[in-house]
Length: 572
Ligand code: SF4
Image 1 (tube, rainbow, N blue to C red):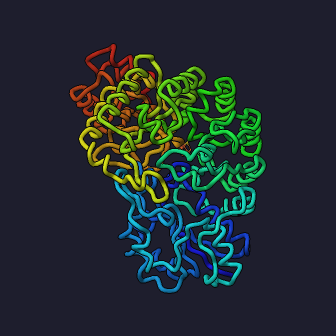
Image 2: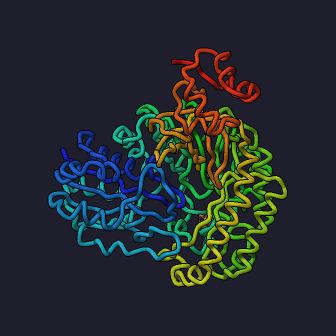
Image 3: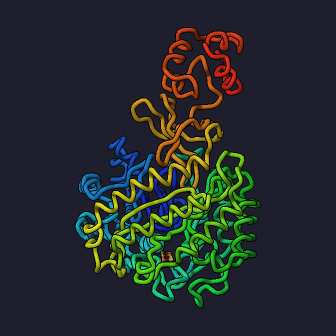
């Protein structure tokens, strides 16, 4: 029996997220490879946050035979429940661990540590001396081979990739039980599911900044393989999944992939995929998607509408189809071979609004587009910012909804066209970028948020993740969940229903429902519409209340008291 340690420093790639509450495919596939060689192999899994909280766990990792560190951020975001491992932490945690064979995998191994948009990634070679190997290929394939060769690392090609998508089937099934070791298991953990790799647009070179094209032609996982993996995850207790690991869910199993840059979608395959998921995992609490190509949706509106309807039938509400639009400036689109024009993007947004704008059972709208802007691309000028801003005003003007607007700067990755251009444009437009972000937050995002979630809407199952000062922050589990600030301190790692009472620029303020009037903290009382500081004082002085009558009498305004009665619980 061999002991394999996995230290999950998290990944965030365009097609794969592994920052908690997400678990990426990496640890699952690696564990699956280890258990495929021998079911009795001992696989120990820790997240970097567990190590930060308890350094004694390093002693356990130090006794393993192989220690694999998963790391790398290609599209870094802001995280609430975990923070990616840094170069310094890798040095700090690993330098004294002499026994195990130490391997680095993930985007950090392939492209370097790109911890912030707008900077060139730092070479993984800077920490090469800590590791016995930097895996540039598929880590599950390397781990299988290493175990199969009795830990003889010599002669193993660390850039080796899987033969095809089907060849990992058994790893994905076997590896599903590793989820039980994740600190967010079982209630809040969400598993990222891969459906294919390789972008159909590879045949024209793909977008100038993107590494997905390095995988070559599109390689779809068979539908049965995906079902088998989800079934195994479900039997091991997963409650939330995201069908997010692919460049465009609408293009999955397209018969034209490999021949056409924008292949015609295949609604039959999407139907089989989503219907089958329901059959093998009938009570999942979350089924969401991620990336979608607006160029495909705009070109094939009928098929795309059908796919949207299939997804809405089988998914859970609050779902987001993320459009990586990057820019609507025609010059930037042309010079970077981007995927869609402004008109096509508007058309795709319109289609998803028409199909997915109804409110679902958890309070969120069923399915909306999200859009990602990327700045610092070739051909960018001052005019680019103005065109992008006008485009957003047009969306507002047309009363279209977007779940989120993500504004990032490019990370020039090796082997992409942008690598040679580097960060010159980013530095030149630094001030413009900041101004654009601010204007979008204030003038575009907040008005859209207000339309999407009017005051009084109830959002279900907000998972509390963190407290800062006297505010508790939480989100629903899913794809691009909305940040909710709850005034007052509440226990973390719990699910709460909340009522929308106010707005941040891209977050909302909510108060827990039912309102336990005899217990809730001052901050929550003050946030109740119509209550404010003075009435909160009055409530604090006069509680406990035993009945509606007592409560109405205690407040100086009968209308305000009555307006919140239906949400109040008088439980002692
Ligand atoms: S469409 Fe562009 S950004 Fe999206 S996966 Fe393909 S090459 Fe990458």
